[in-house]
Image (tube, rainbow, N blue to C red):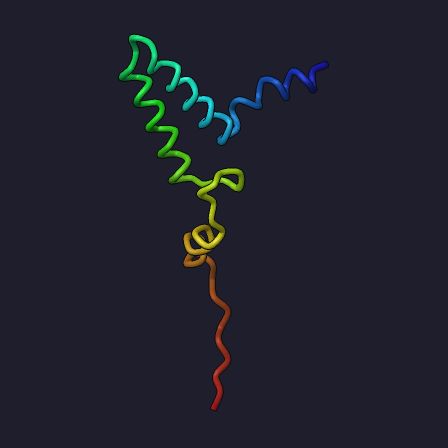
Length: 82
């Protein structure tokens, strides 16, 4: 019982789910008097999906991730020939 409760309560707070939920709430708010808040939520959700790509999002790129992480990793010494 507690396992399913935990799964149900934590699912909306996963990064991709949270971003998509914020976008959907923003679209819903666009049809109400809170259009400014709705527009801000939609823009924040789109920006988050572009800036922080996940494996499930279409803008995901492993090359971009490797490029961002690459400089922080120590490079092995290159062999000297000659």
